[in-house]
Image (cartoon, rainbow, N blue to C red; front, side, top):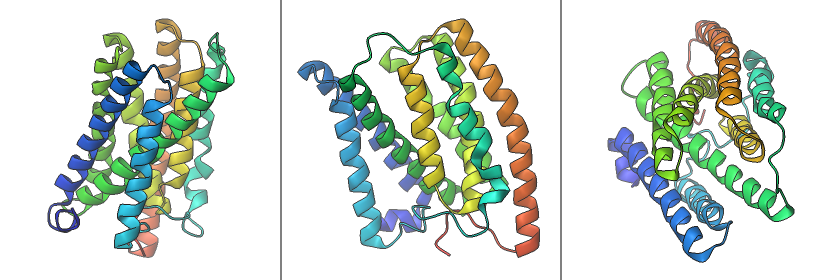
Length: 250
């Protein structure tokens, strides 16, 4: 895999994305068979540990953004405030009934693992791979769109067409915004935290087609404006420094 990472980085990213999809489906299938709600979360937590070990052995954690935000870069993202604001938006729909400690713990484990893996795969592996074969702006947009389209696999998990379409729109916009943030800060870690919080709010709250449409509309308004701001910040950062920071270990 190391050789593939160096010679065909896009294929390296896509293979890991494929492995992630397989892991999710294995976890779901085992969970149904065992009637154990934590199964998918445990499988993905194991995959997260495996990915950390894989990169640590190559000394490429920093290269793919598993490192602190670079000094002085955080204000250019407006401290991620628009993203964290929408992470809590879904709580306006109210908490779902029947929550208990076990279901909340299962949800936390799952969203933490999903947040880390998806940020590493899409804002680490894929964004870096695309950057080597094109412009930074192109890499950001393609990685964001790919992230959104990747959610189509949720149809296999019982999502309706309407729910899937709403999720796809939100995921593309959020994916592009997160890619800009990673490019500005050199770190995927704030995105991991946001991703986990956003998914947790979606897991613990009520849902209806109307409310979900309103939520996605609000997300779209906020994210389109936020993306425009981030794009301007990145242009200024690149002009002033003459260099690009895209989760690279420098």
